[in-house]
Each structure stands twice: as C-alpha cells, then as structure tokens.
Image 1: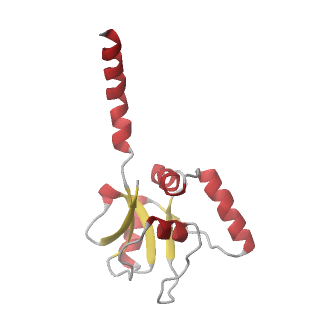
Image 2: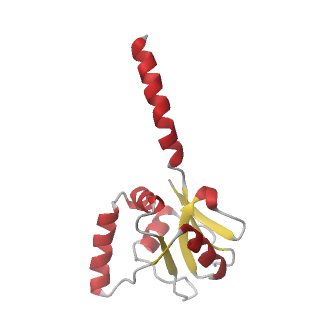
Image 3: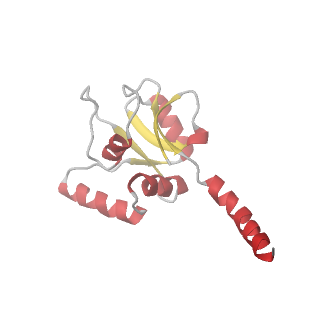
Length: 140
C-alpha cells in the first residue's frame, strides 16, 4: 500500500512537466502558398534542403531564440537532435555555401513577422496560434 502511494505521488509530480511539453505548430502567414506539410517536408525546410516555394520565391525561415525551450523541443522532436548537433550541422552547410541561417526571433516577434511576410515559415507553441496564422503542421 505504501509503495502504491509513493508511485501515485511520483506520477502526480511529473504531470506538470508533461503538460508543459505541448505540441509545436509550424506556422505561416494566412496568404502563404502552402496548405499543409508532411513531417518530411518540415524536416527538409528547417534542415536547409528546401529553400524555395514551387513559385520560385525564397522561403524566409524563422527560428526561435537560441535559449527558447520551444526551439530545443522543436528540433528534438523533429529530427531527434540537440541544439548543439543542429548548430554543428548548420555550420557545415553554412561553410559549404549551401545554407543561410534562419532569422532568430522571440515568440512575439515570430508572430508579428509571420503576420506581415507571406514567404516566412516558423514555429510556435500550438496554444499561441492566432487567427492571422496558418498552421502547416505539428511537431510533437
């Protein structure tokens, strides 16, 4: 009986941390030409493999600030890599000339940027999505 009580308390103590790690939405402006993205397409965009829309317009890639928990969770869930591994990968691409670093912005700046630039794609916690944004997919 004592063991069950201890296990119940332990499970309850973990609940807030589980609730804090929600879905992350990949979002764009309502006028963005994309409808929905598969997980592989999201990987290709954020890992620098896809740089242009089918219309020929360059994708403006937005990233959360380096210290953002959403950024850490996004890449961990998307490609199962730490931020150090992502930075190392991007440094190699940058050095080879095949990649331009995404613009780093805060949550609020991300939403404002996406509201005004129809070529931009970024990500935010799903509960922060508003009516001015189009959800292209989720990473959880």
